[in-house]
Image (cartoon, rainbow over all chains, first blue to last red):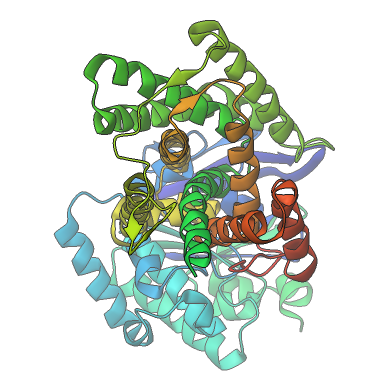
Length: 236
Length: 302
């Protein structure tokens, strides 16, 4: 299984957000998509998960067409998206947020195992199962958002800015966890980040977006070493 | 003393009916962010269907059950055949937030016209299943009757079933998640469109029960032009706003508060203020606590 995106074009009304993006992601790898604000990173993920509509191009996860169909059907094909800004339902409890991700799963026994797995991964969530999600700290909420996505037993996980608004130590912890789940679960991750350095450090590969186009792709270590990328995105 | 007891019990009875209507309005608001003025028309249509069934089987409770199912089906039908398209076409632009609401007003007119075409403008009667003669308390007789007790009990049971359904079942969880954060629900795999239709169906069922119980709170007669049905819509709407529009618990509280206030105004101040009281309550709430008594913080509109 791999993610293959070809000549993807996405418009927001009259504005072209993504103009001809092509890249691919191998199974069980972590790819960081970096770029400045407005580069089209979030739009890219939202299009892959079915929230936004593409104007042209193709995108496939294995043989599953990502550009046609709703998010709820993509989830059933193993594609989960954690949208920007701690995507949890504030009014629900931690446990309800987790259960939400597995509602569609027929096999309730397996869903229960996923929950145990998530709680093992994020013990803090296990201690707060009956608390409302809006009582959690920013980092815990991000863990919950990722946990909710894992409850859908994804093969491809799309993460949008998990570091947003978090303290440096917490960011470090979240990034390590993300690396950990790629290594331990059979999982492919596309990680969109403004925190370019942090993301590239844990990633296998990177895609640099600039104003809706791919400015550079390559292995994460090559990108970190690339003087142009360093100057433009890594800040030194 | 007797008067006070009467006032409270009458207030609770009409409050229970308002509460059901408020729940109906909240259910639609939560699932599609539309104030459904056609709700009164649907409640009326369901009541007529209940009337038709009552003619055949002569059993009030079966009629109530069929009316509930019919209300659910009608409401779901309107969501699928009409609102879904309308919301898609008016999702942006200056009229985006008003168009659906005005459309439901139009629907109200259409539904009422259809009802009049089918059943005529005459009064129909569904005989209340229980006596409307008040209980006696010592030497005096209360206005509170077995029928009124049955109304309160039915509403309480229905509210209990609804809240258990929402809090304890998977579908209930899907309904709540879709109401609070449709996008996240969708990303979690919830078929939000289906869940919305279900929200409308539940709303139609609640409205139908409100309609039928409303007739039984009086002598059982009603017509497309019944004052009571117009009042039911207004009271239900006001009760829903008092309760914060987003909360089922709030809707029930709002209904009870409104029922009690109007009852006290009627019994202790003046009958002529009866129709003004709900609006005064509404304005007071909007001025003092615009988010409603149980309202969620303003700004959340996922």
